Image 1 (cartoon, each protein chain N blue to C red):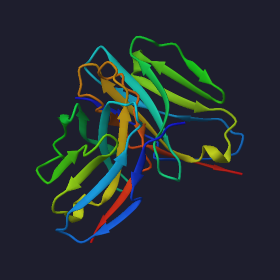
Image 2: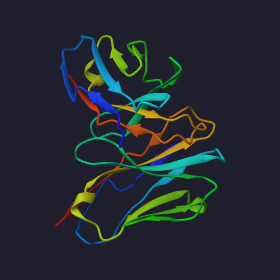
Image 3: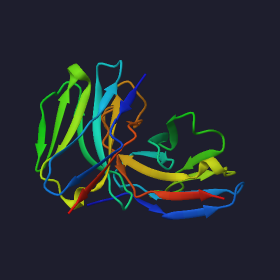
Image 4: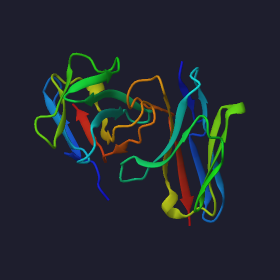
Length: 116
Length: 116
């Protein structure tokens, strides 16, 4: 069965701190895709990144970085030097190559609060 | 940047009433989706739609739900006889035609449905 676990329900940090959001997934498929989405207070879901299961290279985009480790079935997300605008709920999601079209399995989300 | 738009942003209805939630997907996208998020819970897949028919649907998407693309731009979700448990944020999404599982979904800002 597919499953995505985000064990951290809420995290609160002070601006400029680094913060890591954890994501652990379960799948039996050998080909799958992992996503992170951001949900700011305005409500929309904003795509951040997509990784396929064959690409374990870590990725950095500005202050954001992602650490994908198949050995531990984890796809963690780090924000460096956090800012107040990073305050949002962050969702990790999984889809399988053999799964339904567009059927993303979401985790429950981690609410990040960055205080000035 | 093109975006998915949803109307209305908030909808309040009485139990048993029909509601129609509207979405305008990104114009060159071919796949359309509805997801929902009950307060405090994870985002859940409802249905995917391609070439004027349902591609996949979850067990949540029962006979009370239907989707339609009435013209070249709108994509609607109808709930025939709303129940209290239908209260949720409903997200519309669209994607380009990609390999299954790899789709990058663009989400709208959601419609908050409250059933009284």
